[in-house]
Length: 227
Image (cartoon, rainbow, N blue to C red; front, side, top):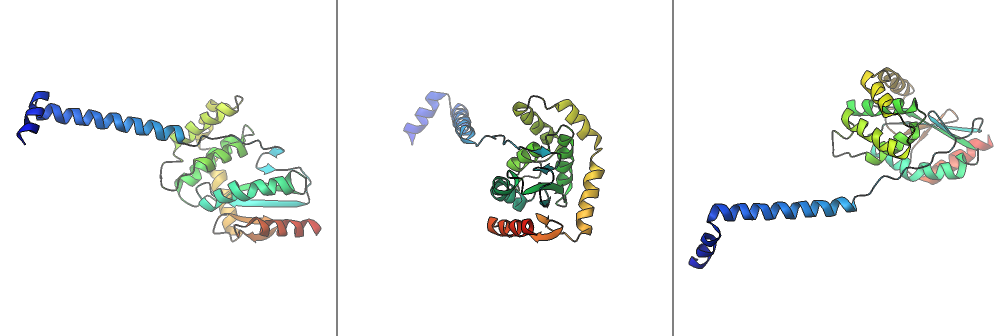
């Protein structure tokens, strides 16, 4: 015991030793944070061809798919990430179907804020690009993911991929909340149709329940196309 006490005293006493341990701990934490940061997945922008406003696809396609979604909804993210790309590849790119995203923002104030921001991006024809980025950023464990500050920060990420995106115009639109009423009205329209969960769909005007399986979508789209 005396040996350790002598060693500590040789360093300048207990206060100095404690400070030394704290500094070492801080350095280790910084290194671990740096390592984890380098492994974090970075956003890769998708290319949305034939995007016009809220609609993807060629005008006049025989099948019209309307999705009612909430940008905070984890099932909407699953559809966007896993099923929508297959629908785009098999039916939208070939002119068989179009896909429209409408807001059913019912999971709280941030859902309305995120939808409002998407409408601001629509002003510059980057609706689908911004929605894609928001689904990438979605974090059910955080209540501030879609705060006004973060939504503006994400707009600057979008600018990195699309230099023609005007972040000052976006900020002005979001600050004014001029699109908020549009989002609320769109959400109320979906509720009046009887939709109370997301994502829900209309395929050529017929309600379609999301099973989470691409095959059920494929069958429904092919059936609608034959009619």
